[in-house]
Image 1 (cartoon, rainbow over the protein chains, first blue to last red):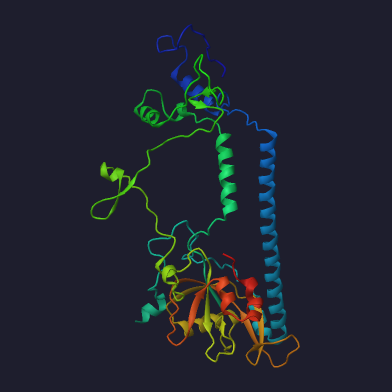
Image 2 (cartoon, rainbow over the protein chains, first blue to last red):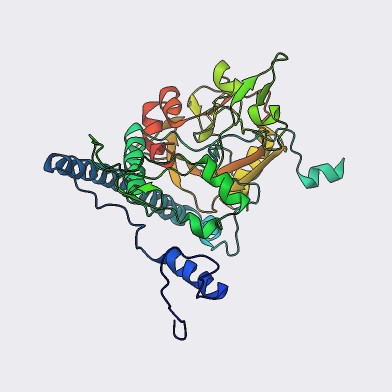
Length: 139
Length: 261
């Protein structure tokens, strides 16, 4: 902010006693926007009882999430073990099938028709009259 | 093959999660900085006037007036002890006119913005409990189960005998299209089987049993179309319903492959 002439005027600021250029005013407004002065809320002060309540809620939620995450980890491990069991068995009985099941499907993508769950269903919930392109061509 | 219909709508949020979210968002609002309206609305403009008219302002501290809940600390039209509510638009009221159509107050005032009325989260199939429909239980993952015709296995995931020189996942894809018609769009998750079940004489076999029939499971998602098999009893079921219908030992082997929601 070098070169800005800060000349203080008595009374309310208006166009007549303006000392700053509109460009400077614009910069000052933008700086005011990011400054915390007068915009910060009052410090949240709670009594000890409320503080204990807050701690209890936070701890309860943390434990609840921990349990969910632990269950998910356990489930993933179980799924991995079952894949491993199936593949080890397949390797012993049929080497061709094992090789096919074990090759990396490089470049495989999620289908475009897959959708992410939304809060409310779409107008057409399910596409019932679907005909694959190769079947439609034959007709 | 495990064919699943993935959820179409988000799952129901558990009550505890909901309460915690509300608590956190209220805390966040209380600790939020005051909205810098001078940055978004230039003083003296029509937009600023319209914005100013919509706001509800806190009462300012007056000399000689007692405030039982503490003296207001007002900066930039906000009481800094409390959260700030910014009103951007008066919400529309949804009304029903004489013809039975839902209209909004903005439509009455001939404005272009109408109130958004979302589709129902429960469908006709939920009300009639139609297990053949793919439109039931939109927030849950549904799995295709067929009833074994020879009735040795009961309700189970569809299984197909292996054709020679064909990988497992291709065989499953061909098999399901032979059983349920070609008008299905399927997306196979992987070429790797996710589980192996061993049967001997139609029953789940123990580890040491000989002459077992192996059933490798491949996962797939149905994206469009219907499973149409006139001669086959089938159903689209959630995990809990599968537990009720299936044999206990069979469910135990596949339970970890099915989604909770």
